[in-house]
Image (cartoon, rainbow, N blue to C red; front, side, top):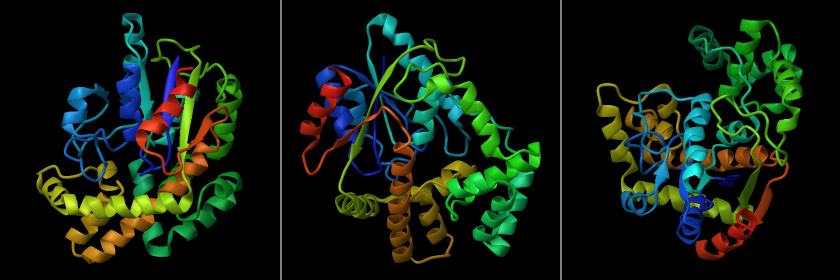
Length: 322
Protein backbone atom coordinates (compact mmCIF):
# COMPACT_ATOMS: atom_id res chain seq x y z
CA UNK A 1 0.00 0.00 0.00
CA UNK A 2 1.32 3.41 -0.99
CA UNK A 3 1.93 5.78 1.96
CA UNK A 4 2.22 9.54 1.39
CA UNK A 5 3.07 12.47 3.66
CA UNK A 6 2.61 15.92 2.17
CA UNK A 7 1.79 19.52 3.05
CA UNK A 8 2.76 23.09 2.13
CA UNK A 9 6.31 24.34 1.95
CA UNK A 10 8.11 25.11 5.24
CA UNK A 11 5.61 23.19 7.36
CA UNK A 12 8.23 20.65 8.41
CA UNK A 13 7.42 17.60 6.28
CA UNK A 14 11.02 16.39 6.18
CA UNK A 15 11.44 16.53 9.96
CA UNK A 16 8.23 14.60 10.51
CA UNK A 17 9.13 12.06 7.82
CA UNK A 18 12.55 11.47 9.35
CA UNK A 19 10.94 10.71 12.72
CA UNK A 20 8.52 8.30 11.02
CA UNK A 21 11.41 6.62 9.20
CA UNK A 22 13.25 6.10 12.45
CA UNK A 23 10.23 4.66 14.25
CA UNK A 24 8.70 2.63 11.40
CA UNK A 25 11.89 1.59 9.61
CA UNK A 26 10.83 3.00 6.25
CA UNK A 27 12.81 4.46 3.36
CA UNK A 28 11.85 7.92 2.12
CA UNK A 29 10.94 8.69 -1.49
CA UNK A 30 11.10 12.40 -2.31
CA UNK A 31 8.21 14.08 -4.13
CA UNK A 32 10.01 17.39 -4.55
CA UNK A 33 10.57 18.68 -8.08
CA UNK A 34 13.72 20.63 -7.17
CA UNK A 35 15.48 18.34 -4.70
CA UNK A 36 16.21 16.12 -7.71
CA UNK A 37 18.98 18.55 -8.72
CA UNK A 38 22.57 18.21 -7.55
CA UNK A 39 24.01 21.34 -5.99
CA UNK A 40 20.63 22.90 -5.25
CA UNK A 41 20.78 22.23 -1.53
CA UNK A 42 20.12 25.35 0.51
CA UNK A 43 17.24 26.76 -1.52
CA UNK A 44 15.41 23.42 -1.59
CA UNK A 45 15.90 22.67 2.12
CA UNK A 46 17.39 19.34 1.12
CA UNK A 47 18.04 16.81 3.92
CA UNK A 48 21.67 16.81 5.01
CA UNK A 49 24.12 14.17 3.82
CA UNK A 50 24.37 12.94 7.40
CA UNK A 51 20.61 12.39 7.54
CA UNK A 52 20.63 10.66 4.16
CA UNK A 53 23.39 8.34 5.34
CA UNK A 54 21.28 7.40 8.36
CA UNK A 55 17.99 7.00 6.48
CA UNK A 56 17.77 5.93 2.82
CA UNK A 57 16.37 8.75 0.66
CA UNK A 58 15.40 8.26 -2.98
CA UNK A 59 14.99 10.67 -5.93
CA UNK A 60 17.30 13.30 -4.46
CA UNK A 61 20.39 14.45 -6.39
CA UNK A 62 19.57 12.41 -9.48
CA UNK A 63 20.07 15.11 -12.13
CA UNK A 64 22.29 18.06 -12.91
CA UNK A 65 20.56 21.46 -12.77
CA UNK A 66 20.70 21.97 -16.52
CA UNK A 67 18.67 18.81 -17.19
CA UNK A 68 14.89 18.63 -17.62
CA UNK A 69 12.50 16.38 -15.72
CA UNK A 70 8.78 15.66 -15.90
CA UNK A 71 5.91 14.26 -13.85
CA UNK A 72 5.75 11.31 -16.23
CA UNK A 73 9.37 10.44 -15.57
CA UNK A 74 8.81 10.89 -11.85
CA UNK A 75 6.03 8.30 -11.90
CA UNK A 76 8.33 5.85 -13.67
CA UNK A 77 11.23 6.47 -11.28
CA UNK A 78 9.08 6.37 -8.15
CA UNK A 79 7.31 3.20 -9.28
CA UNK A 80 10.54 1.22 -9.34
CA UNK A 81 11.32 2.32 -5.79
CA UNK A 82 7.85 2.11 -4.26
CA UNK A 83 6.72 -1.27 -5.55
CA UNK A 84 9.72 -3.48 -6.29
CA UNK A 85 11.19 -3.45 -2.76
CA UNK A 86 7.88 -4.68 -1.31
CA UNK A 87 8.73 -8.22 -2.35
CA UNK A 88 11.89 -7.85 -0.28
CA UNK A 89 10.02 -6.71 2.80
CA UNK A 90 11.09 -3.07 2.50
CA UNK A 91 8.67 -0.22 3.21
CA UNK A 92 8.67 3.27 1.78
CA UNK A 93 7.04 6.62 2.48
CA UNK A 94 6.56 9.22 -0.24
CA UNK A 95 7.21 12.68 1.20
CA UNK A 96 7.19 16.07 -0.48
CA UNK A 97 5.10 19.01 -1.60
CA UNK A 98 5.04 18.78 -5.39
CA UNK A 99 1.33 18.13 -5.73
CA UNK A 100 1.51 17.25 -9.43
CA UNK A 101 3.92 14.40 -8.68
CA UNK A 102 1.69 13.07 -5.92
CA UNK A 103 -1.44 13.32 -8.02
CA UNK A 104 0.33 11.52 -10.87
CA UNK A 105 1.29 8.71 -8.50
CA UNK A 106 -2.17 8.07 -7.11
CA UNK A 107 -4.41 8.98 -10.05
CA UNK A 108 -2.29 8.66 -13.15
CA UNK A 109 -1.18 11.50 -15.41
CA UNK A 110 -3.01 13.42 -18.08
CA UNK A 111 -0.87 13.14 -21.20
CA UNK A 112 -1.25 16.26 -23.29
CA UNK A 113 0.81 17.05 -26.39
CA UNK A 114 4.57 17.35 -26.09
CA UNK A 115 5.98 20.78 -25.25
CA UNK A 116 6.40 23.13 -28.21
CA UNK A 117 9.10 25.60 -27.20
CA UNK A 118 8.45 27.76 -30.25
CA UNK A 119 4.84 28.34 -29.21
CA UNK A 120 5.87 28.84 -25.59
CA UNK A 121 8.51 31.43 -26.45
CA UNK A 122 6.01 33.30 -28.61
CA UNK A 123 3.42 33.34 -25.82
CA UNK A 124 5.99 34.34 -23.21
CA UNK A 125 7.01 37.20 -25.50
CA UNK A 126 3.41 38.39 -25.60
CA UNK A 127 3.31 38.21 -21.81
CA UNK A 128 6.44 40.34 -21.52
CA UNK A 129 4.99 42.92 -23.90
CA UNK A 130 1.36 43.02 -22.76
CA UNK A 131 1.37 41.23 -19.41
CA UNK A 132 0.27 37.80 -18.23
CA UNK A 133 -3.21 39.17 -17.49
CA UNK A 134 -3.63 39.85 -21.21
CA UNK A 135 -2.74 36.22 -21.97
CA UNK A 136 -5.18 35.08 -19.32
CA UNK A 137 -7.86 37.09 -21.11
CA UNK A 138 -7.03 35.30 -24.36
CA UNK A 139 -7.36 31.99 -22.53
CA UNK A 140 -10.74 33.05 -21.14
CA UNK A 141 -12.00 33.47 -24.70
CA UNK A 142 -10.93 30.03 -25.96
CA UNK A 143 -11.12 27.99 -22.73
CA UNK A 144 -13.22 29.74 -20.06
CA UNK A 145 -13.18 26.63 -17.84
CA UNK A 146 -9.38 26.63 -17.58
CA UNK A 147 -9.33 30.41 -17.16
CA UNK A 148 -11.53 30.05 -14.07
CA UNK A 149 -9.22 27.40 -12.62
CA UNK A 150 -5.89 29.13 -13.37
CA UNK A 151 -4.86 32.25 -11.47
CA UNK A 152 -4.26 35.29 -13.64
CA UNK A 153 -0.63 35.54 -12.59
CA UNK A 154 0.25 31.87 -13.17
CA UNK A 155 2.19 32.37 -16.40
CA UNK A 156 3.36 28.77 -16.75
CA UNK A 157 -0.13 27.25 -16.60
CA UNK A 158 -1.66 29.96 -18.79
CA UNK A 159 1.01 29.37 -21.43
CA UNK A 160 0.57 25.59 -21.26
CA UNK A 161 -3.21 25.85 -21.67
CA UNK A 162 -2.85 28.13 -24.71
CA UNK A 163 -0.11 25.90 -26.12
CA UNK A 164 -2.38 22.84 -25.96
CA UNK A 165 -5.19 24.78 -27.60
CA UNK A 166 -2.93 25.94 -30.43
CA UNK A 167 -1.53 22.45 -31.02
CA UNK A 168 -4.77 20.45 -30.78
CA UNK A 169 -7.56 22.90 -31.51
CA UNK A 170 -9.27 21.73 -28.31
CA UNK A 171 -9.34 23.34 -24.84
CA UNK A 172 -7.08 21.58 -22.36
CA UNK A 173 -10.02 21.48 -19.93
CA UNK A 174 -12.05 19.32 -22.30
CA UNK A 175 -9.11 16.96 -22.84
CA UNK A 176 -8.59 16.69 -19.10
CA UNK A 177 -12.29 16.01 -18.57
CA UNK A 178 -12.21 13.18 -21.11
CA UNK A 179 -9.12 11.78 -19.38
CA UNK A 180 -10.81 12.07 -15.99
CA UNK A 181 -13.88 10.18 -17.17
CA UNK A 182 -11.69 7.37 -18.50
CA UNK A 183 -9.91 7.22 -15.14
CA UNK A 184 -12.87 7.85 -12.84
CA UNK A 185 -11.95 4.83 -10.74
CA UNK A 186 -8.66 6.50 -9.87
CA UNK A 187 -10.13 9.22 -7.67
CA UNK A 188 -8.35 9.83 -4.41
CA UNK A 189 -9.39 7.56 -1.60
CA UNK A 190 -10.35 4.71 -3.95
CA UNK A 191 -8.39 1.93 -5.51
CA UNK A 192 -6.17 3.55 -8.08
CA UNK A 193 -6.50 2.14 -11.59
CA UNK A 194 -5.01 5.20 -13.25
CA UNK A 195 -1.34 4.43 -12.70
CA UNK A 196 0.80 4.70 -15.78
CA UNK A 197 2.14 1.45 -17.16
CA UNK A 198 5.40 1.72 -15.24
CA UNK A 199 3.63 1.08 -11.92
CA UNK A 200 4.09 -2.55 -10.92
CA UNK A 201 0.89 -2.79 -8.88
CA UNK A 202 -1.85 -0.77 -10.58
CA UNK A 203 -4.54 -1.76 -8.10
CA UNK A 204 -2.89 -0.72 -4.87
CA UNK A 205 -4.70 1.37 -2.29
CA UNK A 206 -2.97 4.25 -0.57
CA UNK A 207 -3.05 6.36 2.58
CA UNK A 208 -2.20 10.05 2.50
CA UNK A 209 -1.60 12.52 5.34
CA UNK A 210 -1.62 16.25 4.61
CA UNK A 211 0.03 18.37 7.29
CA UNK A 212 -1.64 21.71 7.99
CA UNK A 213 -0.88 24.69 10.18
CA UNK A 214 -2.46 28.02 11.07
CA UNK A 215 -1.74 30.38 8.16
CA UNK A 216 -0.04 33.00 10.32
CA UNK A 217 2.23 30.39 11.86
CA UNK A 218 3.02 28.93 8.43
CA UNK A 219 3.90 32.33 7.04
CA UNK A 220 6.14 32.95 10.05
CA UNK A 221 7.95 29.68 9.30
CA UNK A 222 8.38 30.77 5.69
CA UNK A 223 9.91 34.07 6.84
CA UNK A 224 12.31 32.23 9.13
CA UNK A 225 13.25 29.69 6.46
CA UNK A 226 14.09 32.38 3.91
CA UNK A 227 16.23 34.28 6.42
CA UNK A 228 18.01 31.04 7.29
CA UNK A 229 18.68 30.22 3.63
CA UNK A 230 20.45 33.53 3.12
CA UNK A 231 22.46 33.03 6.31
CA UNK A 232 23.52 29.57 5.11
CA UNK A 233 24.79 30.94 1.79
CA UNK A 234 21.99 30.83 -0.77
CA UNK A 235 23.51 33.65 -2.82
CA UNK A 236 26.87 31.89 -3.00
CA UNK A 237 25.15 28.63 -3.96
CA UNK A 238 23.31 30.27 -6.86
CA UNK A 239 26.44 32.12 -7.96
CA UNK A 240 28.34 28.83 -8.06
CA UNK A 241 25.60 27.13 -10.07
CA UNK A 242 25.46 30.01 -12.56
CA UNK A 243 29.23 29.87 -13.00
CA UNK A 244 29.09 26.35 -14.44
CA UNK A 245 29.41 26.31 -18.24
CA UNK A 246 25.98 24.69 -18.56
CA UNK A 247 24.45 26.82 -15.81
CA UNK A 248 20.86 26.42 -14.68
CA UNK A 249 18.32 24.86 -17.00
CA UNK A 250 14.87 26.30 -17.62
CA UNK A 251 13.24 24.31 -14.81
CA UNK A 252 15.93 24.82 -12.19
CA UNK A 253 16.19 28.52 -12.96
CA UNK A 254 12.48 28.96 -12.15
CA UNK A 255 12.77 27.36 -8.70
CA UNK A 256 11.69 29.43 -5.73
CA UNK A 257 14.70 31.25 -4.32
CA UNK A 258 16.90 30.54 -7.30
CA UNK A 259 14.87 32.68 -9.73
CA UNK A 260 14.92 35.67 -7.41
CA UNK A 261 18.60 35.38 -6.49
CA UNK A 262 19.48 34.95 -10.18
CA UNK A 263 17.79 38.28 -10.90
CA UNK A 264 19.79 39.85 -8.07
CA UNK A 265 23.06 38.48 -9.42
CA UNK A 266 22.13 39.78 -12.88
CA UNK A 267 21.68 43.25 -11.40
CA UNK A 268 17.90 43.38 -11.87
CA UNK A 269 17.05 43.72 -8.16
CA UNK A 270 18.73 44.53 -4.87
CA UNK A 271 19.53 41.83 -2.34
CA UNK A 272 16.78 43.07 -0.03
CA UNK A 273 14.28 43.07 -2.89
CA UNK A 274 15.27 39.51 -3.81
CA UNK A 275 14.77 38.35 -0.24
CA UNK A 276 11.36 39.97 0.06
CA UNK A 277 10.32 38.55 -3.32
CA UNK A 278 11.23 35.05 -2.17
CA UNK A 279 9.12 35.46 0.95
CA UNK A 280 6.16 36.77 -1.02
CA UNK A 281 6.42 34.17 -3.76
CA UNK A 282 6.80 31.36 -1.23
CA UNK A 283 3.65 32.47 0.60
CA UNK A 284 1.79 32.48 -2.72
CA UNK A 285 3.20 29.06 -3.57
CA UNK A 286 2.02 27.67 -0.22
CA UNK A 287 -1.45 29.01 -0.96
CA UNK A 288 -1.48 27.28 -4.36
CA UNK A 289 -0.31 24.05 -2.76
CA UNK A 290 -3.22 24.12 -0.32
CA UNK A 291 -5.61 24.56 -3.24
CA UNK A 292 -4.11 21.43 -4.86
CA UNK A 293 -4.27 19.47 -1.62
CA UNK A 294 -7.94 20.25 -1.10
CA UNK A 295 -8.66 18.30 -4.29
CA UNK A 296 -7.11 15.14 -2.79
CA UNK A 297 -10.34 13.41 -1.82
CA UNK A 298 -9.83 10.76 0.83
CA UNK A 299 -6.64 12.24 2.30
CA UNK A 300 -6.48 12.84 6.05
CA UNK A 301 -5.63 16.36 7.20
CA UNK A 302 -3.43 16.58 10.28
CA UNK A 303 -3.13 19.96 11.98
CA UNK A 304 0.21 20.04 13.71
CA UNK A 305 -0.27 23.33 15.58
CA UNK A 306 3.01 24.12 17.37
CA UNK A 307 4.02 20.60 18.38
CA UNK A 308 7.43 19.17 17.60
CA UNK A 309 8.15 16.70 14.79
CA UNK A 310 8.22 13.74 17.19
CA UNK A 311 4.63 14.26 18.31
CA UNK A 312 3.45 15.05 14.79
CA UNK A 313 5.14 11.88 13.54
CA UNK A 314 3.44 9.82 16.22
CA UNK A 315 0.00 11.08 15.18
CA UNK A 316 0.77 10.69 11.46
CA UNK A 317 1.88 7.09 12.03
CA UNK A 318 -1.49 6.28 13.62
CA UNK A 319 -3.06 7.18 10.29
CA UNK A 320 -0.44 5.78 7.93
CA UNK A 321 0.33 2.61 9.86
CA UNK A 322 -2.80 1.80 11.94
